[in-house]
Amino acid sequence: MPAPLTEEQNRRAREDLLDAAEKLFYERGVQTVGMDQVRAASDLPLKRIYRLFPTKEDLVVAMLRRRDLRWRASLAARVEQVTDPRERVLTVFDWLADWFAEPGFRGCAWINAHGELGSSSPAVLAEVLSHKRAFRAQLAEWVRAAGAPDAADAVFLLAEGAVVTAGITGDPASARQARSAVAALLAQQGGETTDPSGSAPASIS
Image (tube, rainbow, N blue to C red; front, side):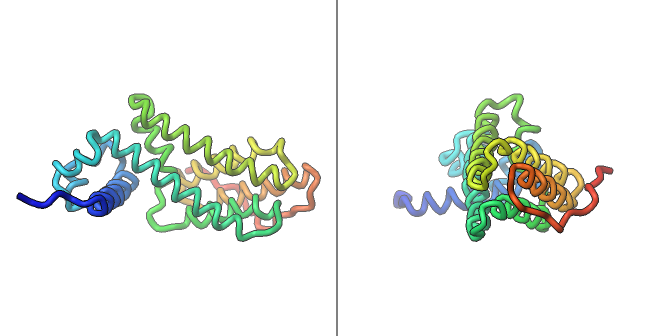
């Protein structure tokens, strides 16, 4: 009889499974990926997978939750390297532009999951809403520190619009355009921020 799995072995198996599932779901979509494909990519037997996550929905929710923590931590690490409060807000859009330019960028994982499952899975919808609320709160904190609390919703909508546009066009230009708009908005709120990096709006074709 095999020895029981240790807590560390279960933790590693869970992380390996989430790594495999995230890559497949993000690249191909949740509904097109079967659990046999997840099994093959993770090198874990289906029985073990279902012990860790009883349903595919559970796996999707866990993947989105882990990705949220990593995504927002990466953004915060970049922004908090900047000392000037208004430049911090603009750095959000520099970070987005770099993300959009990464090989394999396929848009927002949460918007993609919502498009596939949001109308049929309350658990997935709740995770998507949780991510968007957390991202908005993160932005609002930086915008308030920049002395423009009334601009928080506009900055959030510009960031979200840039993400959606880049996901459709594959062009990082939407981040630069959003950055210019935010710089103008912050200037109107009483700051001195200018943005020389603006370019023509990204077109959708």
